[in-house]
Length: 389
Image (cartoon, rainbow, N blue to C red; front, side, top):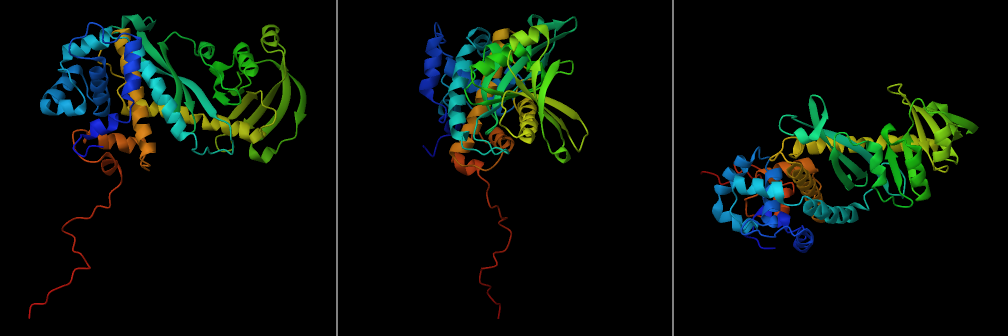
């Protein structure tokens, strides 16, 4: 890699240019474009994510201050807020959603060997959504209720490395359980979900796909116990039962046996009831799998705090989708670089370093790795001392 290239250019070199070009051609992104290409738009928006730019005017001011470096960053077109606003408004957001899938595949390959807290060989996914609140006056198309607007970011998180294996952006009215219709379930994988996904119709689809689910049961669920297994109550377990649904509709939607595990958290005294179609997992592992689901909550909290997906540069649905997908691409790109270079620092620290060093011309590995810093004023104890005689 060229030692004279900027850290930004070195970072983006880890994203396949050919793959991005294929996504652009798939949706004719550069049709009738004269100067500011889709690649320029992508690079500019990634820059905005990594440096926490507040607005289009802020992006324009920062990049126009260093015009001689834009070429070395890979940006060929002139960056102006009107041009960028038009690009976010009109260029198909699916370009960047498809490119995110390319980065997802690479990130999952790199993190496939990462250990889980649990002794399991299967791939474990956590599924959930997070609501992004919007101003109704600025985003009337996202109306949810009389005085509010929002969109939802649905994510299927691979718990090995906390890599999003699937993501979907919907309106705030979209029901979480309907997302299960759009996911291609991996046979043998484990899907951990909250109450919102406890539809027996969809759970039976997972059963037929030979996937394992662990879902927290709803409180008013009617089940009939067939028999019980012994449990160690000192561990917090309360029961491990084989059950069948008894409701008219539920028994039709899920006509076979289920397993019910009840667990009480010894620290908080909260009670949990889980349903699963895996009859071989230890009951305590079932409860620990649900505890591991908390990582997806941390993922949502992390990207909301450290990437720009709560305040938007554009107001149209296309602009919102574009910004969210490019934010996901930025997250994945930093995660890929961290793994490829073998950097031990967490993603938060890497983002903080990148935010103030993108224009520097130093080796990426050197910039992101911990350094053994010592002040030049500190005396070297191995230095020979001269005596004044």
